Image (cartoon, rainbow, N blue to C red):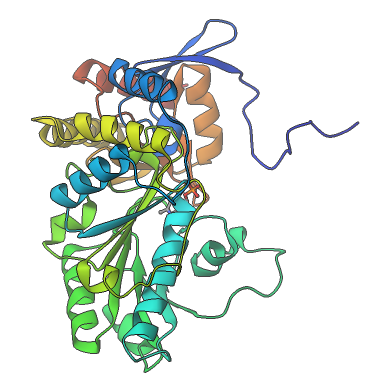
Amino acid sequence: MSITSYLPIYRRSGIRMVRGEGVQLIDDTGKRYLDFAAGIAVNAFGHCHPHLVDALQQQAGTLWHCSNQFTTPELERFSARLVEASFADSVFFCSSGAEAVEAGIKFMRRYHYETGAPYRHRVITFDRGFHGRTYGGISAGGNDSARTGFGQLLNGFDRALLNDIGTVKELINKNTAGILIEPIQGEGGVQVAELDFLQALRALCDAEGILLMCDEVQCGYGRPGQLFAFERAGITPDIVSSAKGIGNGFPLGATLVTERVGSVLPAGSHGSTYGSNPLAMAVGNAVLDLMLADGLFAHVEAMGNALQDGLKQLQARYPEKIRDVRGVGLMVGLEPTGNARVLATQLLERGLTTSPTVTNVLRLVPPLIIEPSHVTEALGIIEATLKQ
Ligand SMILES: *Cc1c(COP(=O)(O)O)cnc(C)c1O
């Protein structure tokens, strides 16, 4: 047999991880890694945080699943707290980022159907955007490598350029349902949407009677130093997709909506068997406890600044090795002049995990709970690697 029993569709490193402790991963030889990949911006509170382990263990002995025929105390509590903490008036739960995006796209279209404009079904998306690996997600996404070989994709998406409002305006017509944007592109290489661009999108949506959806599956949930990245622009979207950090590694996604959108969606118009599963809701509540703890967002901002400042100093010292450093909070992109995947492998050998993207940019997306010593340690490993 020339194939592994697990489908070889990922570029795996050959390292076998057996345990996680705080901000470290431990492999089967006992080697420890400082985890600045955090499962691709997922483990916001690191590995095996006692508060999260407790919540999951307790729920595991209480109720796993009962279907959406019923509500549960965990669902009522988590949704109410998310609504209280955010722009949203109501939340749909699912199990992954792609599903959260799919739900948002469907809600956008259904909103117009229910409000007398069924011809509004097209969605404007952005070059280099990433919205998951489902058929809808790759159709919406702006990266050709995710689309290759799958034939005719879904119609209904028009692609504009990030931070270029003219290209958005050009695409708007009577069929446009809304705009879907990552306020900070992750897979696209940590490309940050300018705040006045986000404000212009909101104004455009208002003027045209269409909806603004932010895909915050990666950039949101504390990572930008606020609950959501769009908050930095002082705007209110109509729909937000969330996942990754929201479950800290437990499969959980959420589509948050305002009353305007939520109130027109009829019962039966969408669903998910595992959505609002009590195990996921219990973990979601426990993650939110940590997320809303006093001082976390300021801590993220401080650690993000320290990491970015340190990387910029390295860029000044090794301009022939580092092309750019950018990001917001603890969503940081390091663009090497050489091959980012090769650099990631060298960093891994020295005990630092990072997350390469399809765009030759390394993502540094550590747990939000890293301390200054971890920033120093990571910068030391990066410098040693650049020198080698
Ligand atoms: C990761 C990601 C997704 C897809 O999430 P999955 O949980 O892998 O389905 C969607 N949108 C963005 C912006 C992402 O980063």
